[in-house]
Amino acid sequence: MKRISFKSLVIVLVVGLLTACSNSNQIVLDQNSTIVAFGDSLTQGVGTTPENSYPSVLQRELGVQVINEGVSGETSAEGLARLEDVLQKHNPDLVILFFGGNDVLQKLSVDQLERNLEAMIQMIQSYQSEVLLVGVPKAALFLAPLPLYESLSERHGLVSDLTVLSELLGQRSMKSDTVHLNRAGYEALALSFSEKIDIQ
Image (cartoon, rainbow, N blue to C red; front, side):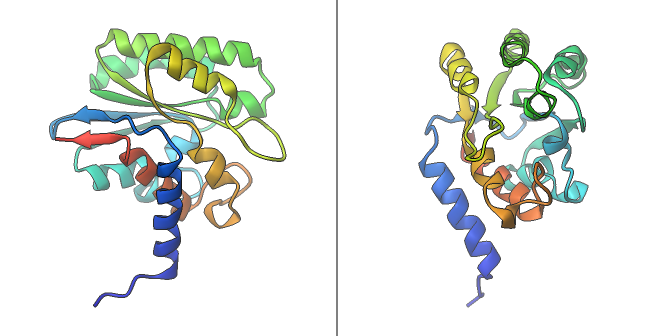
């Protein structure tokens, strides 16, 4: 019998807990679908190697193409300016929208962040693509997602993963620094996202 490492067991338990606490709705895709992971350094994979970034792990987990369109340091305004070119280039079936960290770190307007995210959601949907919205925590001692993510999810009827990043950043074993994940953290992130996607 193959032995399960303690590290693997911890990742499985963390993902199970996060999945139990999150929205049970799923996005249904087929095996020929294309997913675009759109975001900042957490999408790019800062803190680990490219093959262990969450888009790479998610691609292996789901067996469909997952394109990494993460740009380190990018704010939501910069993402909005880049989005249409990305949509035209890849014509994705699903976009994992993962922005807000740099807005928070730079203390930019939360209201403007919400407007930028809403504009991105509307643009993605105008291209007949699905959106998986990822929540980003506010700067506080106890990490919790900014309320705007839940509001956007409810307003646009989105499948979302609102708490996973807050949960992972609260665990030293999952981080490479104060704001980025390590290999184990990105793996847990990808596995949490995979629970939101049903490949048929």
